[in-house]
Length: 187
Image (cartoon, rainbow, N blue to C red; front, side, top):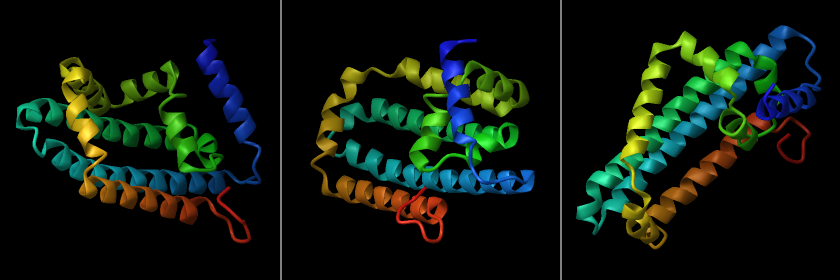
């Protein structure tokens, strides 16, 4: 077993010690976490729309490279929707045991395993096509082309407002999803 897969297995075992005995409760909780994460991804997608617009201000020569970079980001969001749905279906206890959006994101990104990918690749033609599109976009990217427009974003007030709104939306989703009655903070 790969070190990454073993680490993910150990993490899943430690996370599954939660007070849900009933399989129906676990599946319902996994679906609730899935919905919250997809809602967060939609907020992130809205932020990317503003970020792309702001990045293109004053940088017309970089428009094709910027469009590709933001397309790549949107495709990765689409991929994350597939992945969170796959975990909710094939390993609901893992998703139900996560305590915040950061843990969900880590599970479907850093801790996404070869085995997870095989399950999804075998079961979804759309996922396979999406992975190919992402690879194509990444192949076209040259990070040095985008350093100027991305650096300029930090000084754009419209970008900063959109970033703040997305962060606030994420905190709101997290509070509504992961905070239990009587909890001082999200679980």
